[in-house]
Image 1 (cartoon, rainbow, N blue to C red):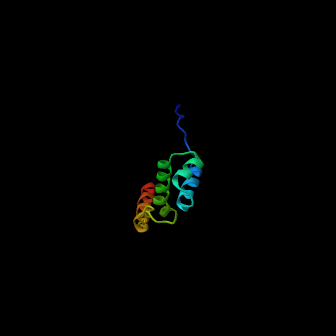
Image 2 (image 1 turned 90 degrees about the vertical axis):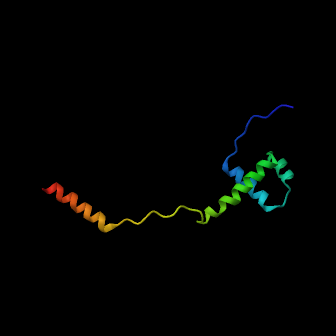
Image 3 (image 1 turned 60 degrees about the vertical axis):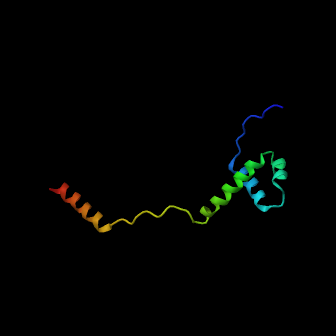
Length: 86
């Protein structure tokens, strides 16, 4: 039996396979045969999709940056301006 060379799949293909696995219409073995990938790979893509789905709707995003202290910035601008005049 000859070994197949390593393949890379685009994100759209991975999403398509993972969504098909989430539907649950077919078994992993049937999906693996249909898409010509290993069942373990399908399980991995399915898990990654489920874990990352919350980020699509705003959960899990980074906290917004801290608010800027405008008064302090204006004071600094004033200092710099006065420094260039004198």
